[in-house]
Length: 465
Image (cartoon, rainbow, N blue to C red; front, side, top):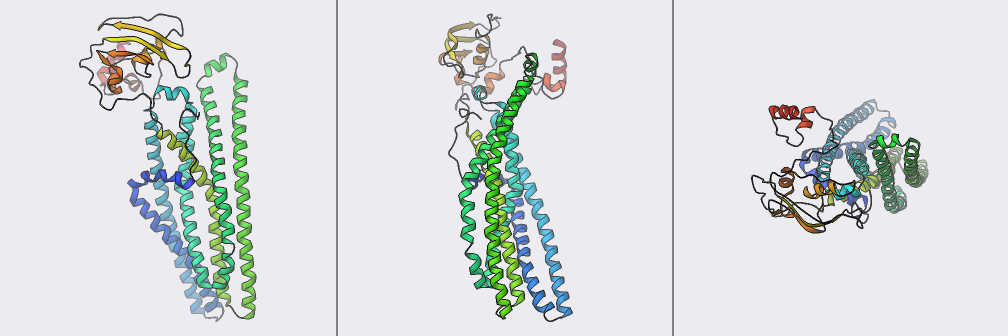
């Protein structure tokens, strides 16, 4: 989106940006509570697996006791059942929660876009707004339904695994703890860079969407001027820039992943080496070492998974920032806080009094200069002039799509700025030369300007046309 379209806020951290989603979660507290409950249950089941393996090694294999071995495997199966059911329930709750939250986000963003004025749309490409409604909200949905769940599960599992490592063998846990700062540090340092790259990538994708939208909405001109090769090259260039941006983001993420995996499994190798020597010397039971290794793998896998998820969280944080910028954008043209009532019935007396107006995109070229016009109720007036003379501008100002820089416009004696926009525009019937046909039935298109029109009214309007 163009910088003038919205006020670009300073970049937030991804988690701070995603906090903007919290109001959308409040209506679905039941699903949120269910997700957290089943998340805790599935994490608890995961953390109980190494204990079951230790009991199986120490009491089943070591003592060759069939009954103990059977009980160990029965317990292992019960844990697996709990893990399966809790994971399924967790997935159901978070997936439905994500769908509902993002649906509400899309509704609110779309409704807000419809309140913005013509000046906003004059300086903003519609293709970029479509990208915000589609691509950005899709990123947010992916994070809500998947990445946040994975990240929180990873943090809970890693924390629980770390506690159990200490409980299992404090000495070996000390070795493992040495590498934790080395793992966390690159994740933290790379986070801001990853968010910046993700935002740049989303900007380039939005640029490509805007190019496609402009071209496809102007196919008449494109084909009339044989612009197909030029427009293809323009879109190719936008896609190439998006790919280059994505490559920088992916390269950094790949390097971070490789570093974290190397550090984690290097630490596990060190712990295994020390533990193996302890088992050989008789200072440590084989079951304890097996339990410790499983907790180390679970914790390492959880921390390693966070590096994968962090990239998605960073991208969604950038997307949510863009959405928040749009939501914070206010229309320059809006109803006054305490509007006057338009006289009823509307008589239709219109007065332009020494109006001066420049379009925001052409501040040095007045569309209307010292323009005055009086139209009495019931009077028919034709505005005639060459293209660019200001005929359409008169109607744009009458509908208050823009406000003049000087002068006043009145309807039945009331200044347009003092009237509520729905009242003003609802009193004016506009019949454009090129009518837009919406993807709806003929009936809905006919009653577009009067949604409560009954069937007889629709038929009468069609016959009159």
